[in-house]
Length: 160
Ligand SMILES: [Zn+2]
Image (cartoon, rainbow, N blue to C red; front, side):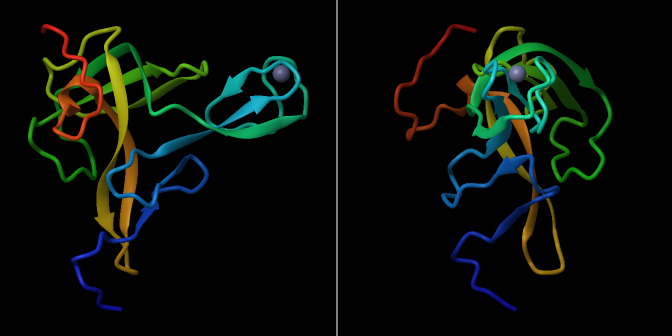
């Protein structure tokens, strides 16, 4: 049961069916949505019946890892179950994905880090370790420009 810590620990979603965890530990998770084959509407989370045209003909679709912050608020209270206490609170926002769905999620960052319309990128956060030694993870969004590391390919720096 004991594994070397040189490899990334296996990660499991807190609830199956909402996002896919890539094998690459540095790759962002992919939200699992549905697209209606009849009217092309895209939904998150997944649906078997289209909420727009009621067709029972949807297909699974992995959604984009980036979107635009539609609105947000900041809760000045530590997030339940979170290991990160760096800000003593947390943001909650709605992110518009290019495919259409507006996704509500916890945001990573401090109270002054968010602006409506800014580009957000999805990431995983580890909540805890389960009995099998796996990291139980959730997704959240963070401002894209705060993620520009040396590995960022086409860094687009905007003035604050
Ligand atoms: Zn439809």
